[in-house]
Length: 193
Image (cartoon, rainbow, N blue to C red; front, side, top):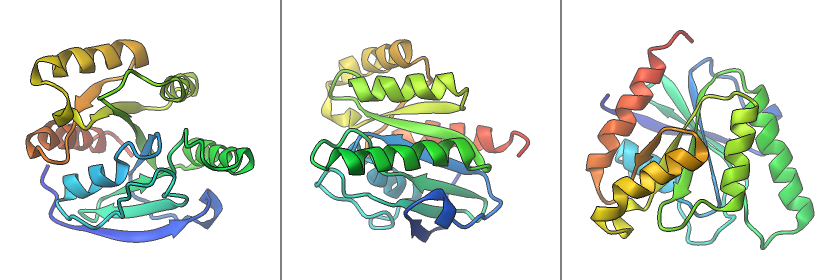
């Protein structure tokens, strides 16, 4: 698959405010600052389409992007950010769960995990929740260029074993990794919607 067009559609605080586009959707989940926005920008080859930040917890809204006029990326608020109140964390969690369970057009979730660290507890809880709810999902091991090349296969295999999900390596600075990810997205888009 080649991405030739990408556009920001809207931001919304919850599923109730999200327009329905009747297009297949991929929902991006992951810890705050794992690189969800960088992932979108790299795949579509537009530097500033999704706003990136070095400040964890910056994405507080559901951000929707239309790709090639035939599918949607939903960039969801990150989980595991400790520097906001428990009340706000609970609201984000509730919005996230509601979106993932009720949004009818989701074809697959994409869970992003930082490859530089072992699987964190909230990453594992998220993967277990995804499996429990029988939601389709694959995993992206982000920032893979920041670990030694000799360890990439082991990191991905370890993530697969722990999370029970297919894992694809990714780096915003190495476009080679995008090819397999785009192939996976294309394969999922070919299923009946």
